[in-house]
Length: 324
Image 1 (cartoon, rainbow, N blue to C red):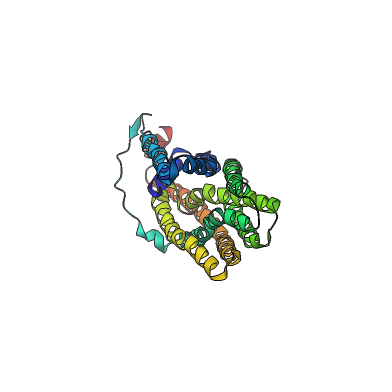
Image 2: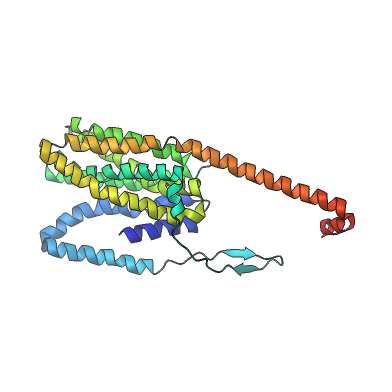
């Protein structure tokens, strides 16, 4: 699943430019739909075929990713020649760029994702059990995951559409969503009514939608499209480590305390902290944009100076070049 996730996200970044955020959000809707559909479907399959049969059916569905993956095609970069014809560029040899680990803005973003992934799966794993512990029926508790999936799917589409607007700052949406989602997760232990948990499931679904949809967009803003593949690989490495830690830690906290309060405190605190860490990145993005503009201005100045020097040395040649 990790290999499928990485490749599909990187390819979307290369395929789209103008509608990149919307395309990323829309393409990732499958996980939201899957959460909505597979929660009741899995329960039905286990009831009908047992857990072994259910796993075989799940494996068959997952295997279809190989069939869909065969339809992916690399985007051929074209170079326009002087005569107006297009020429395909030869593929460059790609290597792992370890210098990215020395890039401070990118490492801040990786640390942010590491913290977020610690709490990422805790609500979806333990929220139904928490609801059952508060006297809510199993059917209603399972529906909380479906509600999470519905708002997660809608959130990804809406987030993509909004973020493609040039007047909107994707990074600001990103860290505000994480802070809000983390704070509400910390207050789950104070929610006892079913309607309160339904509201939380919706809010957390939107939070995760924004987190997933905008990661690739922010990486491109920080490093550029050409470094997306390497950067997204390193980012998922950080996420993998923290995902391995998060849910078991939450389970251990439940075993120690006998309730889910500490688990939701830690998960929510980690998610909120991941949003706070991203706030300095706004200054990094502003500095990068100013550096890009300054570089463009310097390039224009150099060209003007070279042209002036050429006019002094050979006015006749300059007039011919200008005429052409």
